[in-house]
Length: 413
View 1 (cartoon, rainbow, N blue to C red):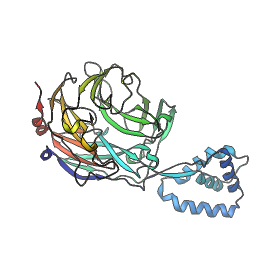
View 2: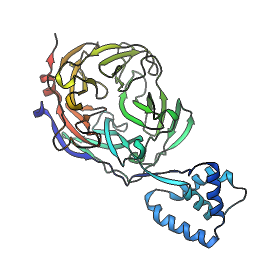
View 3: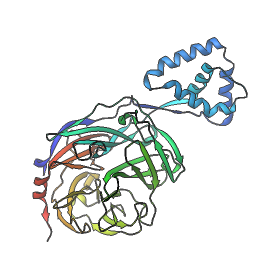
View 4: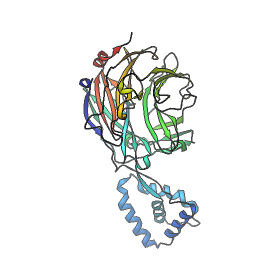
């Protein structure tokens, strides 16, 4: 199968200079008040000096550092019993701020979807799992295009913007970004308690429902430091996001991937319910999943440990291409594919007898060695565009001719 894969020169690696400015609490309410008291004792001249120093150090690292400091001042201003000058407010805000490098550890597990500005053309949006201090994961975005079989990524901004949470609680919330914030600056950072330690492995898909506007969904793993749950992201434009939790008896395991349209009037989902085998699920609600059916079990030696999906199934005239990941000896991950019946995707009608993408000698080393993985691909003009992670550290992109791939499937009669 190796002769089919065309690897691009694209490699996305962690950039520790991309930082968020976040509120910083040094401890208890008593400690907060102690810090405030020390700042209040400073003379105006010293305040001016410290503000100039802080702004000189940090103003070039964020679009509006002063506004961030002002917002963080508001979080502790309730402990003051007096009015302070604008500069002292900035200084207080600075003392109760910290920078967080969102991708200092890794940038991996990508998915791609057609761009909302060009859903039938070659423009695409890529999501990525960024992991930083404390192994906390968030969701970043890039933009790119497919031209004449080649893949190009747009330059990305060095700034980051977490958007504004406009409503919500631990089970459901909404985030909005201003339209003038470039997509590469928008980041979905954990907000609710059950995702406090990470928003992991978003599997984005463009969902089309006859007579209704297109919408993008993504399932992701929410991690609170002890247990996981499955989250659902919904957006039409990547500016306004609705984020909620999936419900139902069968909505508890990782690796759920939504089909891009209803089949027989029902939503369909691929999942790895028991951590070992692939299942297919159907529901009359995108939010609730109560039943599953076995789809595929490990067969080949390179998948004896487990088999799971690598994103949503891809529709072709010959059937649904489902990219898979499998784990074999020495916890070695590979990617392969199966073909599902177009009208009854609970039927596997073809499979690849070998892996499609394997860890290469130059890309097997990283945070978790010997892993290749993807969260979603697209088909454009007969080319399968596959973004993939390398060793849970970085990401690359590859392409496969769809017709050639179809010819390699072993058909099941």
